[in-house]
Picture 1 (cartoon, one colour):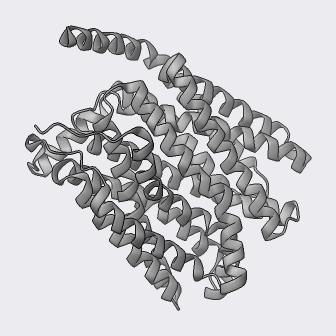
Picture 2 (picture 1 turned 90 degrees about the vertical axis):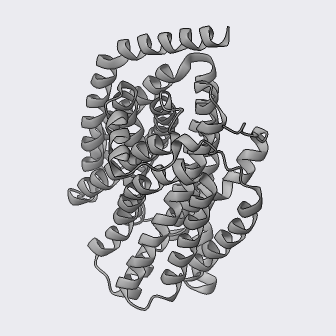
Length: 411
């Protein structure tokens, strides 16, 4: 096995930043323009919701394809293919004159962005064997991934005003093309182990079975799923809450939505600090506790319909979601140093599939208030907390045993 040459952390994050933000820009540039695009295609509310929900579902299921392939063929090959798919998806959306072609473009966007996203997180696990360090690096990636939520809605609004809504797809396609050029030469391919050569579908399914049976996956994946889902579900309903209930303009809504990105950024920044001092499990428990509390407050104050009550609560909820996502991913990846691509594929597939299901549930029962949102996530927060309490002892025991083995092997 060839020794992996690890770039410094700053260089690595700089290389990966455009790759993780492609996924985020594909969502956040688009959100304030949904009403405009809906009118252009004469689409229904359900069809426009489908462009978001099926984007998330495709992103999740695509991980199951790209994960084992990246463990087998290497991260760079998957990355190049993913960027080409993303460019093709933006070309379809830009040129679409019918809703069906636009939808196909969104699905290609999702496939491309999910391959880039997976490649970065799997490469981090290749390069950082210490669990707390890899979780900290995941936090840094999530930090840069939260920046588009702060700036992208305003950029999308201005681009659409000046050049029309198709211009956002020109911007994303061009950015992906530039990223493809430099990644071809600079991205560190971290898979050199011939033992990971593809051995057939049966082996892949056995690997998936091993991953799903692991206590870390069972305890940490659901909170990560809930953290992402609460952010995405808010993405789906917030235009109606802020523009119809509170009377905000597109520009005003873009600024409000940007504060959620700021909360997510702050949450990931603080998460990276907390993990170093208190570990993954305590960080996750803090995030889940805050998330549960915020949903309870939302549910009990829903009748006020006050921006000054709801908006700060939602900002704190997204802050707690950041803790859940970063600590959840870090904890889930702990036992899988030998197949990080496949493991992250399972985690991400779960995460984005749950996003699809819960957002559909929230939107289906949406009544122009956040009642369906708060009830859904309060229910699953409680289930997740119970699951962690049941499995916490086993996780701590396994962690201690793994630490002892590492110390013995080092000695």
